[in-house]
Length: 209
Image (cartoon, rainbow, N blue to C red; front, side, top):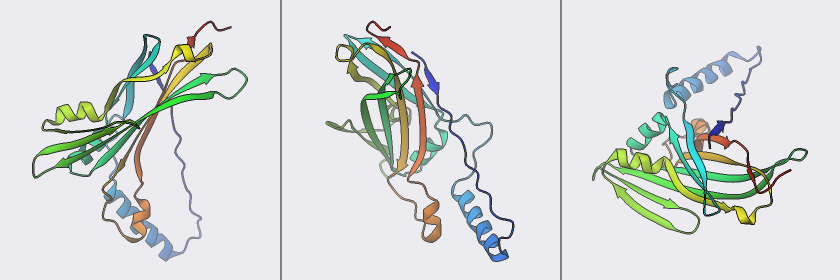
């Protein structure tokens, strides 16, 4: 089943015209520092997005998802900064005249750290109960692992009321190794550096009216 994109708006901040000269200079300096830390990506680059599908196996709703076009995040990982990527999958019940209802969720946390001395990637995965540690030599293999989760059992349809449901997927990444930025610039470094989300098309479970 296909996923649909959720679009987010951008908030633009306007400064008053009567800002004093030294304040304008300070803003200019901070803006220059900000763009040095976070250079603007090429206008031709594709934004990160979520792909995936869901299926019912033995009455279980099973989800498979992956992140594509995370070019900037890949570059950061290769530079040696330790990253955590969190996959959150939520089952939502659709209502016609009431707000949609959260039913259940699963969360998978993955971390990755490149060891340039040994030329290998250290990884771990935690699903809330079990933790798995591994290491990879080949980046193509670790890329497929870090940017995807497969066969996640979200819920059993026999435990759900007849209705229409959909699945919301949220993927976030953050740096575990903080950048060495001090003073005012430290507030410009976001804790979460990527957040993307998608929703599946609604699907019926049981006999719905």
